[in-house]
Image 1 (cartoon, rainbow, N blue to C red):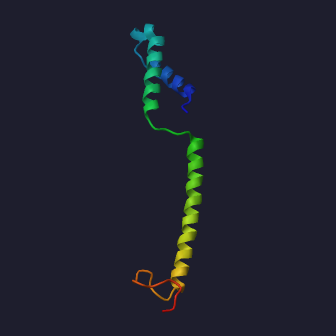
Image 2: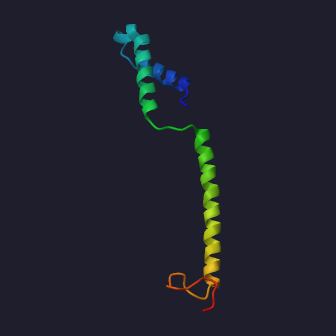
Image 3: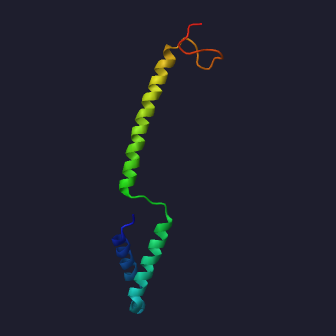
Length: 95
């Protein structure tokens, strides 16, 4: 889910920002940065771009179907002589 290469790169960048007098423990700090980043990101409810794109496509198809159903409902309601909210009215009946 999370690309570890990006986390490694970010941890290296963070350890590069450490003052020169603390660089002796640079590798240890880099590993700590990496662990903290992984822990923080794992707590987030993230999805991959691929999962996002799939869900977006499903949502778009659902929206298209909903729009089509709403249009059909409007056509059917326009043809109906009674109002759908009136008590006892039956769509399509001619009482």
